[in-house]
Structures are given as structure tokens and as C-alpha cells.
Length: 535
Ligand code: GLN
Image 1 (tube, rainbow, N blue to C red):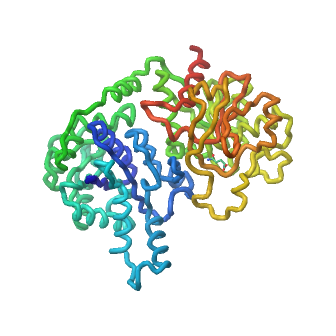
Image 2: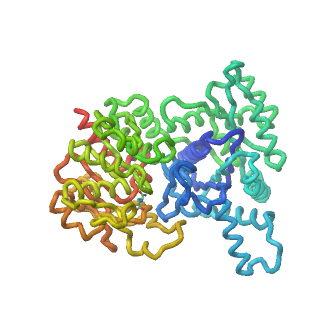
Image 3: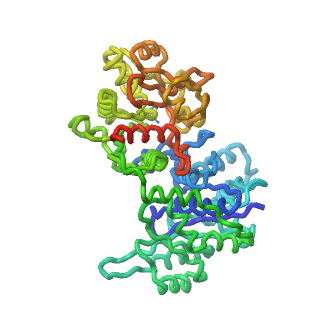
């Protein structure tokens, strides 16, 4: 039987519930358990695919094409679990399923209500993690205890645990123990109140994980234990880490969080295998080969979460090369009002990530021109590849006015155009080219050298594509097509022949990079940037 862990959050959002959940998953996995993880989000959007990155951060894409919360990225990166459509449900997707069933007459004349019909649908989502191949399922509840919109989810996990029994289900509550500077004190009251809110709806946390800026004293532990009804050793401190989020699991293991969880659920502890993880951490904390500086030229730069997986994958590339990657985060629009020379001076590599809409596009194009002309290593991703294609067409291919149909439908040279099957689509949600697609690599290319394989599979999220009508013009002028999707013939990777390292791909390699195994393109891009630094 699959055991369940439910993770809730209290006091404030942004405590790093996703990182805590992913860390617990990693530890349990490294003690020999088979894990699945899921996130339940209380907002009404059916998925985050239609939300601005400023609202929600990055949209993380799974192999099976779900557009999901960025916490799923942590789950995959930390714990190496593969997420799918079953890994992320929202209030919107739950209601949508219930309403569809109601319209189909599926409730046989009953009044359809939040309890039991919505809560039943949530419980069905939780149960979808059950299976012979899953020992422990983790369900993270988005939002904060006390939010009106989280209530059905909390009620559903209360019922679920009641039904499976306390030995098969566990509540972990992540809370904040703030430091009040003026008083010079840390305060446990918000956590007590947050646990109070949970108790009112019938949930008593089994384990309290406390986020704090500073070390908690024994008195804080005792107080939280007494007033939150959690035994002393089940009050765990999760202090801010100094170097990397990948330190979190190690810190939690020091306090035996994983062992306590297993004891509570009557499972043997086994031994914890973390040698590779510790080695990787040592490399992050003391990078043996110094630093490289990479410019990320994007549109949503002010919110770091917008490019979460990009920054993570770059750091992974750093780990693989023994360097620390410093980011120069550049708002593409700012290049338009100043210049690429000024803003990119001295960087070792330039990355242009994905995006939508034309704000900043000319700035990205200018950054790419600078990378191309100055032999600076360049990695273009999705819109970043499309901009590379536009730049090359205009400045090296003789195609004046070249553009993407997304930004200039009247361009004389639409070198990036809407995919045929996209032309009929009217709905915005879940209708892009999504998920994993195969791609075959050209012999002798930098991409093939990176992957060391003939054929790869990568995740997509886009409507527009390289316009193959122009393929000859590009190839004649030195921008080679080196990756093609076998059935559709869609162009997936281009690279510059006469450049140290200039590779651009239509897919999103950042989603598949992990700290223990950097994505090949990120690894080689950071490697080329290190070389460019002058190694
Ligand atoms: N806006 C572009 C498209 O839809 C690129 C998308 C992206 O970068 N994810 O094709």
C-alpha cells in the first residue's frame, strides 16, 4: 500500500515548500523508497500555462506535455522523479472535471457541492499517485493555511488521512519563525497560530518544519513543541542555507527528518546513500576553477522565478565544469535604449531564454548579434533560437526585414512562422506544441558532441517554428541545421559553423538538467564560456 505525506504551508508564502518537499523526497528515495510527488494549487486557472511569468514564475513542462507549477522542477531536479499530468492539479482543473461530469448527467440528479463532490475529486487526484510501484506519495498543498481558496484541499487531505489511518498518512507543516530585528528576538507565535488554523479544520501536523533566518534556541523548540502539540524531536529547523538550495536535504537529514518520517509510518530506515550529493555540494561551495559570468538576456528579468530552470541548469553546467556561474541578468529592453556593447561587455557567455510577445525582442536580437560577431559562446532557447534565426537572416543572410510572424505578420521574410497545425487553434490553454518530441542530430555538430547520441528527446512549448523554406539560405551562409524532428521535419537545433560555440534550440533543455547530471548543452555552453574567459 502506498503511504502518503501531505505538506502544507503556514504564516506566509514563498517559504520554499517545493524545495522542502523535494528534499524530503530525495532523502526518502536515497533510503531506498519509490516516490511520487504532486502539487495541488488552489488558484482557479486550469493550469499556469495562461499566466504571466510575473504572476506565477516559470511554467514547467513535463515529458507528457503538462504545463505545470515550477515546484515540479524542484521535484525532478532533487529527487529525479518523473512528473506527469497527474503531478499538478488546480482548483480550476478539479472544478472543470466536476462541472463536465455534471453536464454529462454524471451526478444523477444530486446537488453538486464542494463537500463531497469537489473534495472527492481532490481525493481522486491524490489517489492517482497510488500504485504497486510507489511506496510513498508526497502531496504539496499550494498556498497558505488560512486562505479561503485552500479550504477544500485541506478538507480533502484531512478526510484522506482519516480514511487511510495515521500510520499510512502524515502531515508536515512548513512554517516561519521570524526574527524581529527591533526586538532582537525570534518569534514562535505566528507558527502557533498557523497550527491553530489547521487544528480548527481537523488537521494536527505530525511534524513541524520551521523556516528561519537564524538558529533557533532550545527554548523555541520547546515552545513550538508544547503549543503545537508536536513532540520535541519532530520540530525541525530549516534555516536559510549559505550557498545553495541543494544543501537543504543535507541539513534536514542532520536532524533525522527522514528517519522520523519513516518511524512514524512504520517503515524501516535503511541506510542513507548521499555520497554523490555531498561531493556535488562540496563542488558548489568551493568551485575548484573559479567563476564564469553568463548574461541572461530576457523579458521577465526582475522576477527570478520566471527563469528558474534556466538559472538552475546554468548552475548545473557550472558544477560539471568546476566553476561558479555568476549571472548578469539583463532586461532585453534596456539593450534597446543603450547598446549591446555597453551592457554585455566582459561577459563570458550569453544566453537568450524563451518568451512570448514582442517587448524586448530587438534587444535580444542585438545581444545575439554581439555574441555572433564577437565569438562569445551563445545558447539560444526557444524564442532565443527564433531570435538567433531572425538576427542571422537580417545581418548575415541578406534577408532584409526578416522577422517572426508572431511579431510582424507582414514581414517580407517570415523566417519564423506559425506551425500549420497551430493556424486553426483558437483556445490559448494547453494548445501549444507541448512535451517531449524526438530529434535527430547531425554528425560533426557541437550539439551531437554535447549529447554523445544520434537521437534525443526534449520538451517543447511553442507555437512558432523555424521556417524550413529558408533552410538553404541559412545553410549557404553558415547557420547549420543540426537537429531535426524525424517525423515532422521541424528544425530543432541550429548552430553557427564558424564560431567557438553558438547553439540554439527550439526546445527547452533546462527542464531536464539536474545538479548531479547537468544537461549536455548547458554543460558544454558553460564549458565554452569558461574557455572564452581564458583558460
Ligand atoms: N513565442 C514563441 C513561440 O510561441 C516562443 C515560445 C517560447 O520561447 N517558449 O513559438
